[in-house]
Length: 243
Image (cartoon, rainbow, N blue to C red; front, side, top):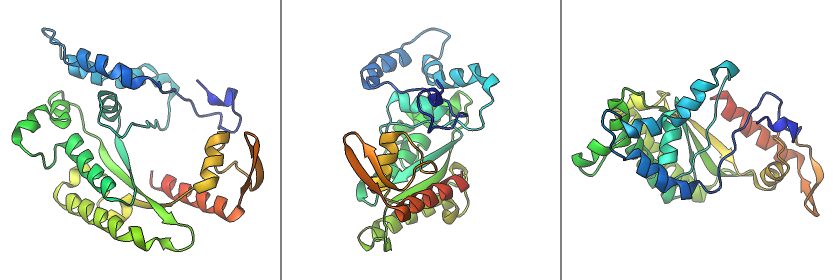
């Protein structure tokens, strides 16, 4: 659908395919179908190609870029999305769970540091390459939890540096899995969007169209600070410049 028809804040050249809030309920059925043995048919790759099939069916639209927002779990529908992408953007929070999540993501997508060679046989990357598909590259790491006034918050800086160290090590040993050659080219520090982000999301209004001042959200009046709005726009501009 074209969201501009119901929300004129969204640019007219943006189309949207809505997600399904009950996708988790469909996951078991998709898994069962993907693992069904049919002579002469690779059912797993047929299911994994669902979004590729969709994209191939709308080539006449000539999109410049297609974005896919994925669940952080490595469920079958996340694999379907990843298999159709050229680049991956990984958001990072300044905590150990995000550090583990990045390590897990690289293990699940590329089969890095698996605990046993047995896992490699069933790994996503192995099965995709067997079907002569090209694995996407990690293109950007978005580092969140940056304070508004102090730059990288000291409480989080050590964790974020450790994550960068981990990624730098992988960049040296597994460079084909990354679209950048220097860690500085693949990292963006993103400030918390806080109230400005909540208002932008609630109104369906991108930052470049949002105005400072008091705005109505539901039955409340919310104050949007001009300096905070400019910071949000700068963060988005930096992200876009690296896409």
